Image 1 (cartoon, helix red, strand yellow):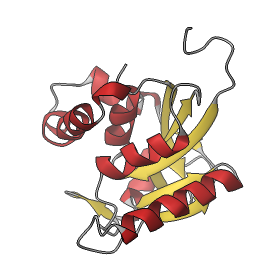
Image 2: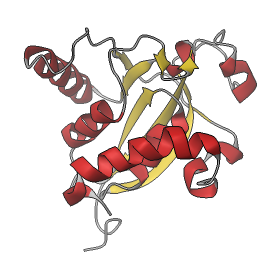
Image 3: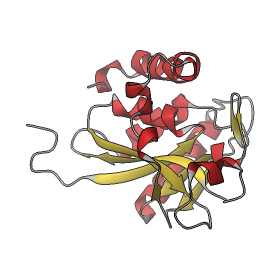
Image 4: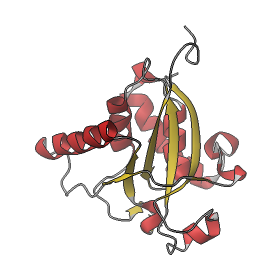
Length: 183
């Protein structure tokens, strides 16, 4: 069966640093039908990348994932999300610093909220991290698509220094741990 045939897709929205990284990680996953990078969680309507980069809009850089639950579950996406970034790092991932790079899950319904909170609780109980998980779990109120040049950035710019040194290691990490879930 084709991933797009006869299925009702769902959406997940995650922020965990630069949206180029999150998108590149999820684009390789079986059951992910589409990814769109953008901005969520702030007060500015239709923000630009330049505005979001100031940290003054309240928005986080996020990736909205359209997925087919017949091929991948929301809990699987949560597992990939948490492995792909440091959820204990407040408002930063590596050299990317600011509230726009915060670790955040924007849930689309109450079930996603429960699953996200349960997953965080599980990670905390297992002591998987040295520091406290700071990932926010918030309702999705707004999502603004980022500029066209940000979409599929890693695929379009694999030789850029940022992609080689920041995005690629995250992609390779997920490839290593989730080989059975790759396209």
